[in-house]
Image 1: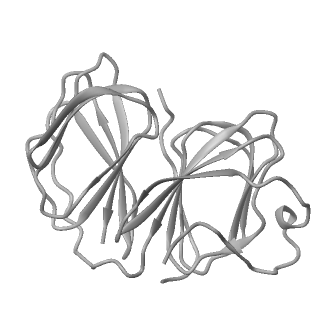
Image 2 (image 1 turned 90 degrees about the horizontal axis):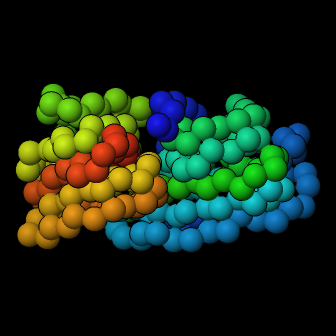
Amino acid sequence: MIAFLLSLTIGAQASPKLAHMSSGRTGAAPQQTSRPAPQRTTVLDNATVTVTRLRFAPGSGETVHTHDFPLVIVQLTSGDVVDLNVGDTRSNGPRVAGLVTFVQAGTEHAVVNAGSTPFELMAVAIKTTRRPAPAAPPTEAPPGITRTTLVDNTDVRVVRVELTPGSREPLHRHPNDLLTVQLNPARVQQRIGSRRSDAPRTAGFTQFVSRNVSHAYANRGDRTLEMLSFSIK
């Protein structure tokens, strides 16, 4: 089972593509060495968010840079030695799948794979030009479902959701746009508006639900479904 998510919130407030702007800062190790860049794949891009999947081969990494939009970084697969710099905070060591880091707009940050195995991240860029909306207040989870809030600020609420086999949500809606990112392989039944699906999904499967659209998720597999829910404010 994917390990419990930890959240880290660091930085300051404020149109995205994940091509970065170098900060020109000296004194932090990751930007001092020329190294291959991670492989970036755009998963979703709309008026609210840009979601990018990044694959870091051993030895690859980013230079220290900033964005003019807030960003949520999700460790999608585990890394044996991940060098992560966010603002004045640096961590270097193993990072298990499911760890979440919030980076406020304008905050210097960089990720480097200093280990011997590749890993993947998901980066959710929250557009400053989005139509604002209040996040729905937390509600009591139905039987078989647990919800754990990891990040809750003026831009986004990130909640870890676990659905045991056979559990399902009632049909419901939110006043805000919603993004879900699946953390482990599982068979998922989805109802979003008039659309229905029932299929195996892999880790990293991403779903966007527009505000005020009725939706529900159900776990149709034989193992606990783990995913992140992003309520965009």
